[in-house]
Image 1 (cartoon, rainbow, N blue to C red):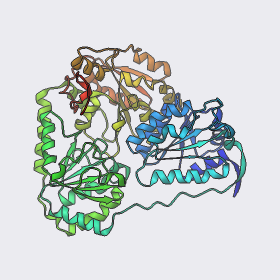
Image 2 (image 1 turned 90 degrees about the horizontal axis):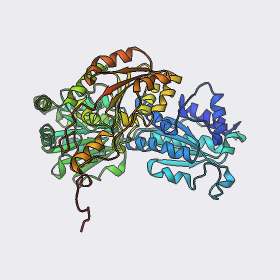
Image 3 (image 1 turned 60 degrees about the vertical axis):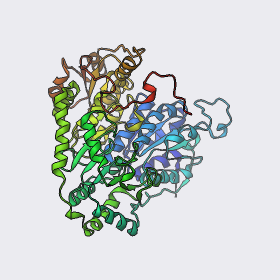
Image 4 (image 1 turned 30 degrees about the horizontal axis):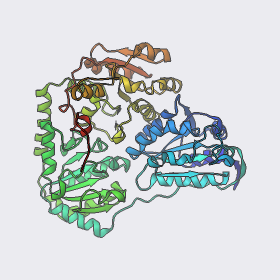
Length: 562
């Protein structure tokens, strides 16, 4: 037992859990925590310019490092601002701890109008957090931190919340610190594994569908070993992109969904539909089993609520992706799966067909993607904002290293990419990090250029400038006879970047990114590249990348169902 303040107990508990950085903004109800961080040499605090960036940066840090990211904000408005980053982390199953202040203990729930008061504050983020706790005394802090990290490291990792009334940060009492929880990976029962192994060995056209849970479990190597040992090809979800190299002879690549109208997407859809067994690993199957009820679905997932949600013809394997693959593989091999002929020729043919249609259609977006691909090192992290180019990147940008492809998941947070990329760079300071954003999204958090300069977070940001919310403008124009409210007034991005002390560059043509990105990376400084994009033709709906006909995007009398 040691006598300390609640702020000191929090910081010492974070150190014990291996935390080395906190993304936050000092504020009135969290002074005790901030003072404790100031006095702790083992943790540095990166102060952002907006609370939204705290959780986005923590998310980027978590996804790149594999360790929980930590954010710190004041209550009320601070928590609401940070909630956007929580939604993104929740969508991508990312372990983020948000530490939020509270109003004084005696005023909680009274509706007295205290500074930053929000009635039932935890409820405001309950839908995008896995677990929440309020601590009311310093001695409660170590247990709360222990449980927060246990929650993030067990089951499906997702954001968690601890809130602190201001007195707790400064009050002192005897506190018992805790060591981190010992976490064991969950493995399905031997009987379930043997059943799955025999089904896999007996299958004729099996397919692996790998999701983001593979990356969260650090199971990329195990996935590749499973595919190679059994000659089972792999399709990845967008969250699973990079879990097997896109260049691997058993990788079909990543596909948004089975409803793509483009012929090359139909080719992948045909491959997926022909599977008699689909092995889902760490994926939500958000669009359903690509092979449907006609196949057997072997569903490996740490989240037991996902196991039988898709279809009845399922063998559920509740377990950690890496531990389950490692336990399953020897059983599959013993059952005779190694005798399956190699599908690499069929995989190569499908990938060649995709490449053929890229060339035949001559869509400029592919040329821009190729220029970006050629300009970025293979081991670089690329964070894609919500842009049409990013939709194409999901299938056509080639990833060769685990966890280096970062997107927003189903949350589709416009503007998330720049602060998330900063968090990635903090986690991996010696690796190249490139952010690709539109002008609309970049300006959501462009003030974080100040943060990048202050802390030397040397991210290269490509700003695709068309002076518009381009995706929305195109949809309204093509389906509703004209756009409205989508035009933007932008600064001169080069001068804007330079006003913060960053380096600004300007391309005359998007294809110059092939040479400008390596030049920017060589500067070892924050760089913004302004890229004119209004002249790049984006195909009208429904022919652009992977967007199927959503009913509310078409003019009609309504969506009333009988």
